[in-house]
Amino acid sequence: MGIEHTKEQSSAEERSTPGKAIGLTSPISTKPIWRNRVLLAVSFAIFIDFAGTGMVAPVRILYATEHGASLAVVDAMATAYLVSNFIFQFPAGWLADRWGHKRIMLLSLLAQGILSAIYIPVTDPYVFIGLRFLEGMFGAALMPATRALIIDAIPENQQGQAFGIFAAFFNAGFLLGPGLGGLLGETWAFGGAVITRVLAIMIILIWLGASLKKNTNALQSGGPSLPTTSRERTSFKDLLALPLLGAYIIAFGDYLYLGFDQTLMPIWLHNDLGASMAIIGLIYVVWSIPNTLLGPIGGRVADRVSRKWLILLFGLGQIPLYIGYGLANNVNQVLTLFALHGILYAFMIPAMDSFIASSSPGKLRARVQGLYTTTGFIGAFVGSSGFTPLYHISFRLPPFAMGAGYGLCIIVGSTLIFLAARRAKS
Image (cartoon, rainbow, N blue to C red; front, side, top):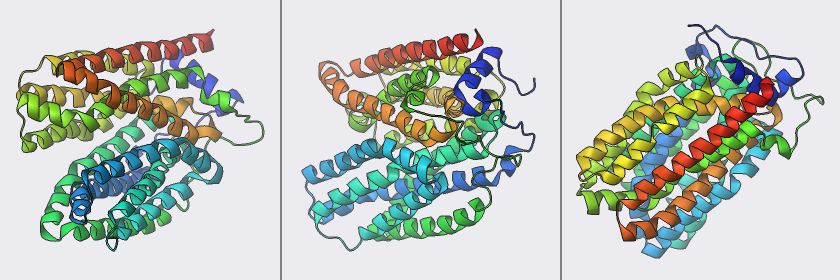
C-alpha cells in the first residue's frame, strides 16, 4: 500500500506545519522505527515512570492514613494533584519549548524521584497535601516535553508508528505498576515501593542522559527537525489553528470518561453491577492489554491511512460502547465492552497523536501538547462534577451522557479538521 496520506490530509498538514510553509519538508525515513534511539529511550523512561506511579499509588493512601490522615486529607491530596497537574500543563509546555524538551523531561523525572523519597521521613499528614501538589506540578511537565521530543526525533511519515509504540509502553507501565505495588506493599510496606521507584528513576535518568545526548534534535534519518529560525513566526493564534482546535474539542470529550473513572466508576461497578475488587482490577487489565499489544499496529495504520478519517471512524465507533455500558446489567457485559473499547482506542490514539504532531508549529510543540491535555482535564472536571447528579437519578445515565457528549465532540472536532483540510486544498 505504501506510505502515503490523502491529498486533503497533506494539504491540511502543510498549512499547519511551519517547515512546509516556508518550502521545507520533513525527511522521509525508511529506517525501521525500532532503531530510533530517542523513541526507545523516552518510551522506556515513560514505562518506568508510570510503572512506578502505579506501584506507589495503591499504598500511598494507606501510608497516609497510618500517619493520621483523615478522609478529608486524603481527598485534599487527590485534589491537590489534579488541580496542580491541570494548572501547570500549559506553562510546562511553554517552558519546554523555551528551555528544551530534553531538559524539562529530565528535570520532571528527577523531581518526581526526589519527591517520592521525601514521603518516607514525613509524618505530618498535611505535608502530604503539599507533596501531592508538587508532584502534580512536576508531573505536568513530563508528557508535553516527552511528546514534543518524539516529534523532534521522528519523521512525519513514521510518527503514527512512534506514538503507537509510545502508547504501548505507557499502557504496559500502568498495567504492571499496581501489581508490583501491591506485592511490595505486602513485603516491604510503603518504603519498599518508594525506594524501588526512586532507584528505577535514577537508573533511567542516567540512561536517558546518555541516549539522548546526540539525538535530542535530530530526526531518525539524520536530518534536522523543523527549523526554528526567525522566518518561523509563531503566535498564540497558531495554538488555535483550525485542525488543533478540532483536536482540543475531541480531547475534551475523550476526557469526560476520566472524570467518571475518578469519581463514579468503582461505585458503579461494585454497587450497581456487583463487581468485586478483583473484577474491577481485571476490567482495567482488559482495557490495557489491547492498547499495549495493538498500539504499534494502530500506529502503522495511522501512517498509511488518512488520520482524520481514522479519528472520525474510530471515534464514532466508541459511541455504541458507551450506550452498552448504560444498558449493561452485569459486570461480564462490561468486561466484553471494555475489551472492544480498548481495541478501538488502540487505533484511534496513534492517529490522534500523530495528527496533532503534524499540525503543531515547530516552536510550539510542547505548548500544543500542554494545551491539548489542559483541554482534556477541563473535560474530566466537567465529567466528575456533572455525572454525579445524573448517577443519583439513575446509574444508567452517566454512560449515556458520556456517549452523547463524546459523540458531539467527535462530530464537531472532526468537522473542524475536515474543514481545515478543505480550506488548505482550495
